[in-house]
Length: 90
Image 1 (spheres, helix red, strand yellow):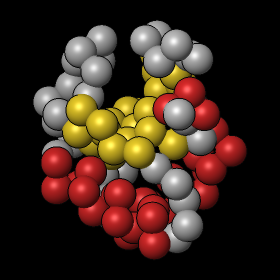
Image 2 (cartoon, helix red, strand yellow):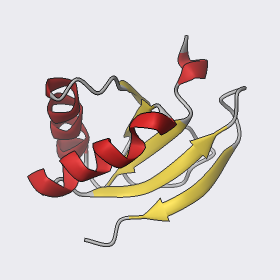
Image 3 (cartoon, helix red, strand yellow):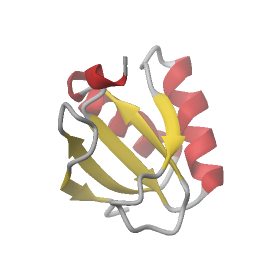
Image 4 (cartoon, helix red, strand yellow):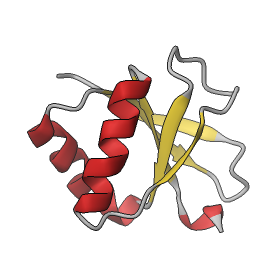
C-alpha cells in the first residue's frame, strides 16, 4: 500500500508534521504519516509520505500556511532507499 507513496517529507517539529497532515488532507492531498526511518537522521520523529504527482501542490499549500518542513526525499519502491531532493529554504 505504501509503495504508491514515493516522496517522504520530514519536518522540523512534530507540531509542524501534524499541522501539515491536517492541511494537506483538507486540500484533498493524500498523505500517510509514519515514524521517520532510521536511514534519515533528523531531529523530528514524524514524517509524511506523499505521491510525486502531488509534490508541487503539497509544498505550495505548506508554504502558504507557513508550515516549516525539513527535507524532501524520493523513496524507492522497496521503501528503504531515500535520495534527498530538496531542503526547506523558508
